[in-house]
Amino acid sequence: MDQEEQILTVPQMILALKIKQMIEEITHQGHFVLASRLHTNSYLDKKALYASGDREFIFKAIAEQFQEDEIDLVISPESKASKLVLSAEIAFCLSGNERTVSSMIANS
Image (cartoon, rainbow, N blue to C red):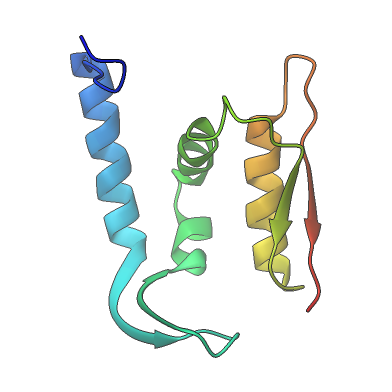
């Protein structure tokens, strides 16, 4: 089997479908102008994410994608509290087992 191929177990497939469904519920498609004045066709509704009872699950799922990487710092792009919370939660999920990941705000 090729190294890039991965066979998922039934619990892993159920988990992947749950993550996909939760992300679809808090992601909007359309045309959006960001605070940076850049344009995007999708938007993650952070208010819906924080209101979700499954937010910790989502943070862990995001962090899992980077668990093997040597990440020391998760940076929020702006000084808004909601973005700092997002980076802090992901940093917390990446921390553990002799590893501490910090979070900070990058002011433009």
